[in-house]
Image (cartoon, rainbow, N blue to C red; front, side, top):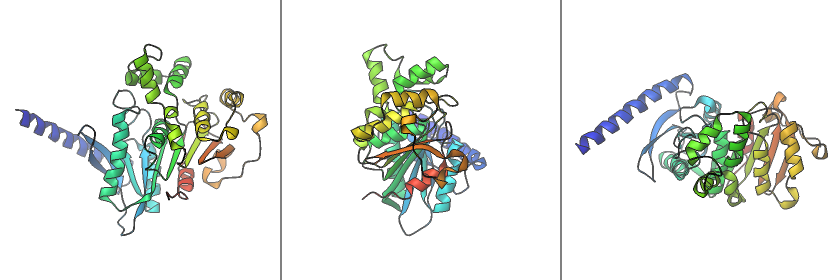
Amino acid sequence: MRNMKTVLKSTLFLVAFLVAGLQLKAGYPDEVKPVSIKSSRDGSSQPALFFAPETAAPVPLLVALHTWSSDWKNQYNVPLAKGCIKRQWAFIHPDFRGPNKNPAACGSDLAVSDIVDAVAWAKRNARIDPGRIYLTGASGGGHMALLMAGKAPEIWAGVSAWVPITDCAAWHRQCLEAGRRYYADLEKSCGGKPGENDEIDEQYRMRSPVTWLKAAANVPVDINAGIHDGHRGSVPISHSLEAFNILAKKEDQISGPHIRHFTSESTVPGALLHPVRHDDSYGEKRQPLWRAESNHARITIFNGGHEMIPAAIFAWLSGKEKK
């Protein structure tokens, strides 16, 4: 009976997997295929999307992470897949336990393990240059990208995070105050509200990139936020600015008053105003308004909202190689 249940479960998973693969045709190019990766942590089969060029030479790998409320089928990252095909990079789009509204997702140990497993799987199934493995994501993908920068710094030649959530307890408060539904997702993932008890508070802390970012001190990290996010978007740009402060030298850190001005006024503080070099990769309408670099980190506040700019991701990552 147990064997029959196992076979039935595997068959149902395969049918669902194949159906999902057919549904992808409307968004992702035909070269991008659904694959199944066995979890090294709990043995489950985890879905992902994958592309690798046919080449004898090792190629870069871009690990693209889905947004907060989506999963491995999310089509927001189609431009990244197309960019990899154009450049003949490998591309993988893992599920890491789906939308961030259950304890297995939202920066859990299982989710972290799934991303590490996806990299290992890609290296086994394609000729990947181990010195050019890149990570990127926006919103919830930006959250997980920065978390992984600190959790597995030895893997990445570059991490590009866009409009990320970096402090889960702070975002819970901000969403509750603004009437955004994401506070309920956090409660489902962490077991309750911040402040209810020490165990729940620890869940919020452990799932927050700010807890782990110091370990990414030697990883090239690029953090990007639209100046209007938090007003015409769901994540205040204080999350990006405070993450940069963890990676920056003390003398390069952004002051509390300047962070509050950026966040509340959606403008660059007068004391920080200086000419910013035109960056073609951001396009004419999304130009950087303020940029800073320190240690291996860069932060860009651009003229936009809660979004990513694929051309800027490729432009920055292309120059990075792990020595």
